[in-house]
Image (cartoon, rainbow, N blue to C red; front, side):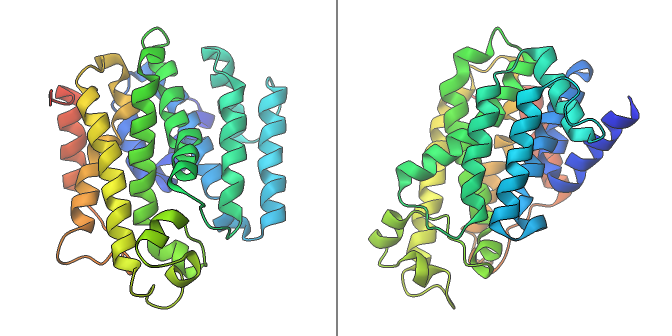
Length: 282
């Protein structure tokens, strides 16, 4: 492994440990490419946490657009940019997917409310679902197109679960990813949800969000048995989603105030089981 590849892999391990673990189950000759995708995703997902202000954040997203558009040696000296451009070229990945991903991440930089469930599902489609589909293209470009719809369901389940895990962080900075129509149905609003204890409708809104994540997860699991083994590593993060959601609904956890965590042993076991056997027929 080259020094650059080691840097990229370590970046994923530090910023997105669950995806790092899933990448280890990929064939050795595909791991560097997967880690370049996951490192890029971690870079753009973490822009708000590193830069804090929206306008410089948009400038950073534009830098990534320019680097990807230029390809080749663009981004020289930046290990993740170099690795990503090499992956795009080697596996003939569509640059439009990266452009859409960067466009979706503009939402992260502001405190605007998520308008509706449809908007949230669109955000999921352009972020986690796109990442899963890109990873699938790296793993098996012949099989991947046939599972694009399944990647959409998987991306929605994974993103919604992740947003629920990040609720305490988002609320502290005044950000609300729970759609306004779900909040309204629960008797709340984005402004009320991020203030104080979240208001009387906060728990109902969180329960509705968990139910929506489970809806997409169940739809994914119904089709996941058909996944060929070659594509399984791209979808492996979903092996953890149900356990995270179960933890959130457990009697000892309050999603508004604390982050649900799975032990390292539990995560390794769940990933190992799905990597080896896949998902059962439902």
